[in-house]
Image 1 (cartoon, rainbow, N blue to C red):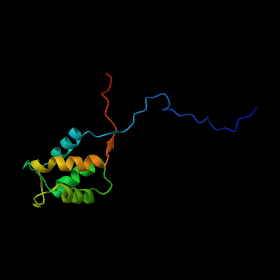
Image 2 (image 1 turned 60 degrees about the vertical axis):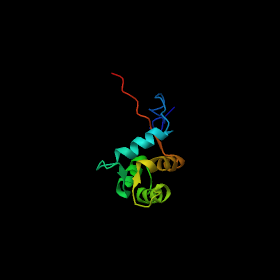
Image 3 (image 1 turned 135 degrees about the vertical axis):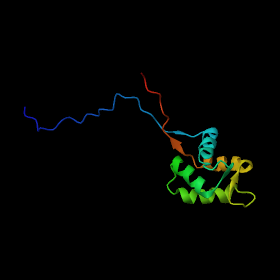
Image 4 (image 1 turned 90 degrees about the vertical axis):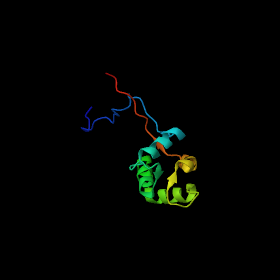
Amino acid sequence: MATSGRRHNVNKYSFEEKVEKRPYTKEELNNVFWQHDKNRDCRLSRKELRGAFKELGAIFPLFRAYRALRHADDNGDGYISEDEMEKLVNYADRLSYRYFPVKPRKS
């Protein structure tokens, strides 16, 4: 019986463990936002928020930063302070950002 010369369709990844995306916890979201406080003034500007939302995987991070400021900036100064951080984290949590957990390599 002659073959057509094609190889069988074999998935070389079928035996590896499948890793699924999982949602960020509120603590992880809080850490992501504070990592983007570049000037360490304990406030997040729109530019810093844009970087954080970009890391979280937002399609339009500038839009998300604008919306986050509108949602969480209670005093209207254009910054998210420590007092307003809980509202920001709740806002980001509702957006359900997900990521692949990093597994430690076996040595």
